[in-house]
Length: 315
Image (cartoon, rainbow, N blue to C red; front, side, top):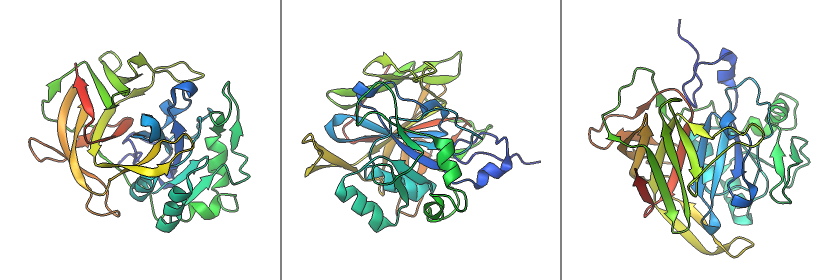
């Protein structure tokens, strides 16, 4: 009998009905003054991309656990790349604020979202040791309840644009090429910003670092981990004149395009290529040396979107 699988990470579902859920795509900050984040280890997939000031921001998607019994955050504002994630995965984005031009682009694309800064949504709340704007959190379970018929998010949930789409292919029996044997990788998206991953053979997972320091989850104090890390190298525009309140120009990543990347799996590195011809397409991934499609083992994926010129250092 076929087992129902989570479309976001290929893991078996406790309840097949979960496959009909709408993913919740939560925007979470990675500012050093607001670490550690909360809830990332409970997400089915995490996407990271650069924003202004050379920092990065996470989009954590929650779908396949029956409950997410934890605060998720700190929740921050949307960026242009959120449109591409919605177009591919078909989830409902939850965030706190956004620049006027970014929100205009979301509206023009028809993207549904819930902005905690402008709506009286009870599932957003302030907590934690930091001052605003680094103290907003999300109750994922309460937000999901609000997506039910008659709930405050029901009309937005109806606009996601169709059933959830799997951003990657998964198969427990997939055998990748040999690749390069590595112990760790550092990713420098600018001269002052780096993050990375260390392979842990005992747990069979990649362990997250920021600026060379281990990353932990708030509350549980667990290491942030991923089964698979995939790096997508993209063209990026620095939008001079479109600045944040601190005067830093915003970024625009070209995700309808094609390019190269690196897949990190089981302590090995594999050069890959990617292609997304139109906004309606999913990103297609292939191994650079064979042209075969990339098929991942079930488990959490961290999808790193980085600009051309990023320095990737493998050890």
